[in-house]
Each structure stands twice: as structure tokens, then as C-alpha cells.
Length: 101
Image (cartoon, rainbow, N blue to C red; front, side):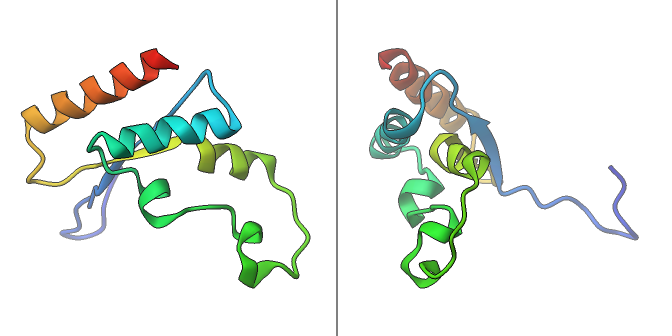
């Protein structure tokens, strides 16, 4: 990917999709990962599809793909202070929790 002028990428998270689980079970995986010390944005910030928020209650919508993604995405932090030890620890936590489901 080319960046204009002296531009450079600014990566701040690495996105994974939890496979093999759906709905409440997928959300439980995210909560367990977050509780184990790996920050998961959906849990931390309460992500949901926009039409499920009270402020948008006047909008009648259905987007199953968006709902599935909100349930199953894990966004891992990526920044210069994340070291190999952190990466291995996150991988171990996610693997252990994933195996439990």
C-alpha cells in the first residue's frame, strides 16, 4: 500500500474473528478474553450495531452481518509498547479460552 508524501501507516489494533461460536456464546468468549487481561474494545466500550442504541430507536433496521461482526471481532492492541511477551501472552489467553468453548 502506498502512502502519499512522507505518510506512514498508523496501526493501532489487530482484528481477529472468533469462529465456531455465535450470539451469546461469542459474546461470552469476548468477555472472558477481556476479563483475562486482553482488552477487547467491544466489551470495554460496549459496542453494538447503531440501531440497537436507544438514541436510534426510531430507526427500524436489520443488518445480520454487522450484528455477527460486533459479536465476534476481537481487536488486539498494537502499538510500540507491545512486546513479544505481551503478544505471546495474548495468544495464550485467547487460545486457552477458545479451547474452552
